[in-house]
Image (cartoon, rainbow, N blue to C red; front, side):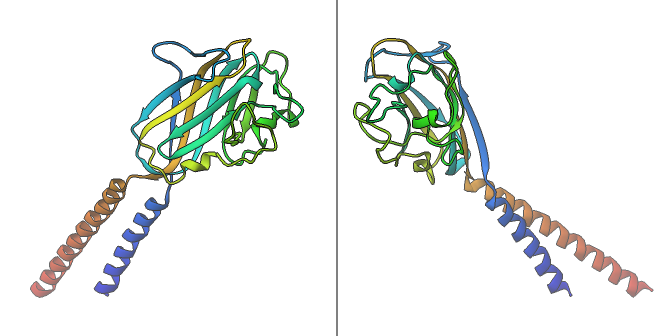
Length: 241
């Protein structure tokens, strides 16, 4: 009976450790100041663009999914090219939205207040007017799939293949430098990044597993010692009687 009880406790500890290991963590980051300025201005009609680099200290050592938020003011959305880079991951978030073989300028709407994630129900942000047209002077809103077209912004059209999704970050360690690059590629109008953010889902660092397992084993040791003490007291009482 003692052996069975011991096995049951060990199995319980193993179950809870496995449960914790199978859980994902979510970390959220928001960036709204740029070198002490409230926005990051993009040079007009300049492919050199502007970058914002952020170094993360994260508990996530294996990314499973990413969502990016963008609050980007612009006078002409079809001018914009934006990508995110980290480690070996690279995702094209915007690539001249609205550009097609019959529309080389792209959409003439005014900015983005959006979230971007693979598989979003609204579909491809490059063709957002297939779903909705923002009011004059208003930004596009909602949750969309990233553009994903890793193509020269001067040549890109809607029919180009999409491969540079946020899934390129899957499996990577979240720690380190994340770079958001933005460019306004046509002259006329102004563009500025007001804020951006990351929602990273992933597996926490192994040390957290070790802590959980260690606590489980300590609890088991305490339980076993208490059980042995009760058994000795019971045996002593039986002997005296």
